[in-house]
Length: 555
Ligand code: BES
Ligand code: ZN
Image (cartoon, rainbow, N blue to C red; front, side, top):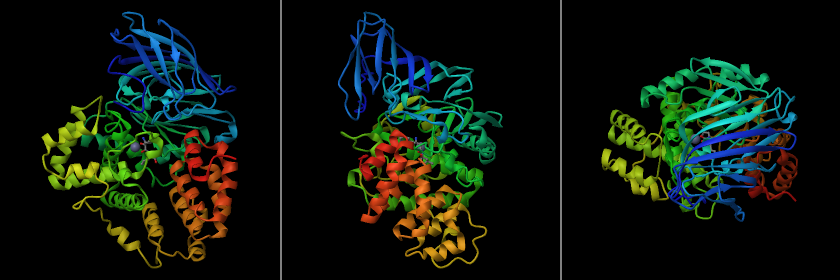
């Protein structure tokens, strides 16, 4: 049972969708229909998830009833079925405030010429733009037709053929994705390419030049890439995440375009989801670590193959340190891998624990059983559960059979700490940048800069700025780390940059720590409120809801 869905796939299971949608920029709505195909139902009714949808009519059904709106779950749409019915067609429109859609005005895009629309369905936002069984336990295939005004391209995470789209492998609802705007495309390799707004597409193609090497690295480890093409879409800066693993079309933030490929482990991460997540899917959001922990582990293996062991070690150490930092402030129940999400929105429970503690568990098992055996295990796991949704209990049953007694699994998964005997990532390069004033930073990588900055206890901000001009850094990871330190140290010369950054970036991972740090002092709080009042309208609904929880809702 998935507590985040009203649907009852145990009674009627939807197998295929046909979407037919018009993108109406002026009214900020999608309108059209979805046809849901299912096995001739024994059950008398079909229950779907919706949020803020206007349901206009339902074909091939006895009627419909839209229930009351729950703040987290939205409203159940109950459709009484005629006997033997195998499909229904729902005519509907989205609302301008749909939680899974962001409608951008031209000034919020790079080319500033056209508006832009994109979807973000994970975790439970697909229901705000399609009435469906919005649970990761159900996989559907789909065909779609999406009409846009002239001059706009529409893209979906699917096989694309003009304005028609086809997804032939079953995927969960949270992976259904659409974007529309002024887009250019560059080939990257035989089966990969990048879409971006025209002013960004060349830089994006340079940044992502190693994509085919990453796909090959992943295939050597875990078997063939099963989705045909692997393309990327660079979104405008308000995209609330670093990346989103929509099948065949990863969505990314433009903040990874650092110019030196130093942040492309994010591509390795989203690509890794082609195995962990998109092929073997968490059945509920409490099992989210099965998606993200496995993906961070696989991401690091890809990074090691493509960029070498030292780069992988550095990233593992950065992850380990950030995990400790975050865990220190979490309730015990949020430090377990398997999450208790009772009465919670899965968006609010997204911490580093499923990511980094999950990856650490897998690294620890790898060390216990040896790399060769663990590689064979993982490959077998992906094949065994391919195109299925599984729970933590399914994983436990499988690993207990394949790799008995490797590590104390119960403690890792249900306990609130990092068990004794956990693997401990180490980087020699990092040991050299810790403490003291650096002598020569000319060859430092982004990872070394981050580690150096985070290792400073009471940083001498003016001295650092004078030597390294960090306020002007074009690397979003380094800049956000520096700005965080500037708030802590109340380093006033960086304040205009803090405001500029908070008003232009929309990535939640950068926004949350900066606003939280500001809120720790009365002067900071006043500043946070003033900046947020200006910035809020440009944020994605998901980021707005997170920052509302930190700064307080708009007055
Ligand atoms: N699937 C996640 C993004 C996500 C998680 C969206 C939960 C909605 C709810 C994606 O794969 C991810 O983990 N992105 C990370 C980047 C990654 C390199 C850790 C991000 O966005 O920061
Ligand atoms: Zn991920």
